[in-house]
Length: 345
Picture (spheres, rainbow, N blue to C red):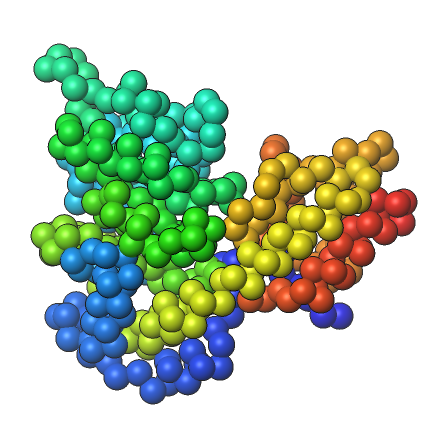
């Protein structure tokens, strides 16, 4: 039985071209900054994000935490979304590693933080009893598949700059956000001091993320990476597919977005399936609203027919499109969903 992967774009497998690039990669000791393939990847990443320099790191979590470690001091507060990746999926690392406090915000109107919400939480007084605001962390694209408008990013960036507070962007799916907004990635990252983006999600590389920022920031981040155990030596074998991810992979993302829109549209036509929001990137969120049918039941039904899905969460179901799924898979997925909703068991 053919397995179709709808759980996450982290499930993408490297292309044959990536495998060839891994085999043929020219390598050196990256801890000594002597791996030529890593250097090429970092230069390309810096160019695409409009930053002075970049650093290849093992994962998005690693990149985010490395940035927090560089930007903050113990006892600082970090302002960030309550449902952000740093809060929900990084094992409390910002407190465990850096001794900083998360000041979380549940956005009132949008899924992203607004400048108004950030401003209300800035610690700007000289009161010796309160922590200093050390960092603001944004996301784009967000965990619900939506994007943060450039205008709001600019407002947050201007607010932060006025108070000399750095802004870090968790841009795990940065290039999905850029595609959805119709701009180059650098138009997003111009509003932040540092950014991490992932190579191993929709871009299709087998591993790795890149942290970008100023030359001074990356100099400090390189030392922080070493302290965190991220010195990976002859890692050009992983940087090589990362280079292809930043070229071929970025161009291919449009297919995922098109398939996600198709999936959202077709699911929305099934009685009892409620698609929660406009599909902006490569994610579709929905709920099952029919007596006798359930989200758990749908996941089990689909799994028995070769469609891999994560179990439902409190907010419902999430389906993610990637290079592992084509239009035919989407249509087969919808037909299986329709059969379940019509009573097939």
